[in-house]
Image 1 (cartoon, rainbow, N blue to C red):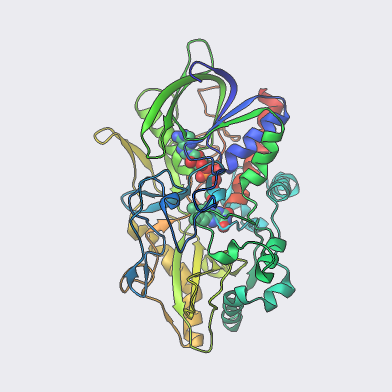
Image 2 (image 1 turned 180 degrees about the horizontal axis):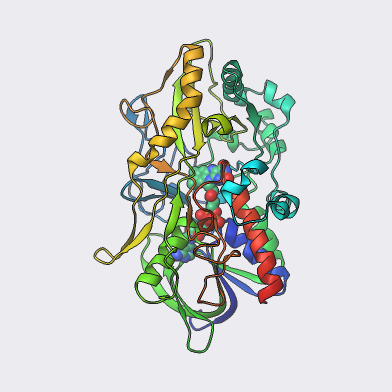
Length: 497
Ligand code: FDA
């Protein structure tokens, strides 16, 4: 309620926020989490909490009147559909040169993501977080993050036989025939549950096209892991459909936090101010960057340094599909959960996930999300004329990513005598180069903050999410976001409380 005082307020309930809340609560601190998205704990009229990717309804999309699917076309035809405007689960946030996909709701990106839980190779870590000691990350914080997230590998024997990973086996065959290292990647999906889905003994989720708009079963998203543990301490409260709009030094010490309550059509129904001794920014790379850039530019937090807003990257994301020969079907039943990839990072700067295309029919398509060593970095700035924060990323900045992804797929196409699909992102368009799933940076560790996420000039203000990571993790990012948050909160609890 308005006027409340809390010891610790956490903005956002994704990976960084969930780690902060759990560890603070375990240290005896009462925590209030504020989340602009919905709680996603109540079934809709169809008895399900989440809708599928093949039949998206109002629950699918954050405050739009038409879906904006990452794969916009199929056989050249647009597949988006009109929906009622609603505080749905997947946000496609448009900037001038890129659309940034993000999860909205209690659990943040864990609600909508593929659950792929990859720890970067240790030899690459110095490029991921140059100011962080790798010894403590690989001995303590990566293992702690992976254990608490519940990541695990597919049973190799099941992979060889199940129909739903035919697409993975085709991906492996083509990778290996072109001499690329093929790797299995861990995931937080419950693999035993998925095997039961295939056997027909439990309700289907990964095998029913559920993922981008939430999984009704099987995925160990944050509400089942970190956030469940946090709530069990009895010290963590969560306010869903509440959006933080300002954090300002309070005369009495601590910070005054302004919070808007939202209705499911996005309308603001109330504005509240609470005070907090400490505020942890965990609104995600984009959310935290936008808040801090605006608060600095509008004089609310003027002492924030000039690094705030800088160093944003897209983790080099680029997508493409390949058209296989008729003797290489990828299967009409595809698990939405990826389990393998092609590692050409050291030679070509690309790590490609073999991704599903769960259309329910045979497409003879292989689909890939590549993570590449794209060097381009963008900057967030305050636009006083529009009252919005802009991002100066340009579409052409994806060219290095395309070049790196081609080191894999040009070679595979040449070997197999196959071609790229041109019907998935528009009419005659090969590359999905207009988007990212992996926003990183904007408030970079040891530049905009100190080496533990403290904001200089404002004791008690911390950044603890993907905004800290300077633009690339070499692999899918959430394990690194989680492990870094574990490291930082350990240090903060030991020294600041
Ligand atoms: P995260 O975005 O998780 O959480 C931020 C939260 O803050 C959100 O819930 C948001 O609503 C809330 N918020 C924002 N502004 C606010 C405000 N002003 N007030 C209150 N709340 C606010 N990664 C990976 O490792 N493996 C994978 O398989 C995938 N797959 C994938 C698929 C798709 C479709 C997407 C969109 C993303 C992925 N990712 C992924 C990326 C991964 O999900 C992402 O890196 C993390 O969720 C980022 O964690 P953070 O803690 O930084 O923020």
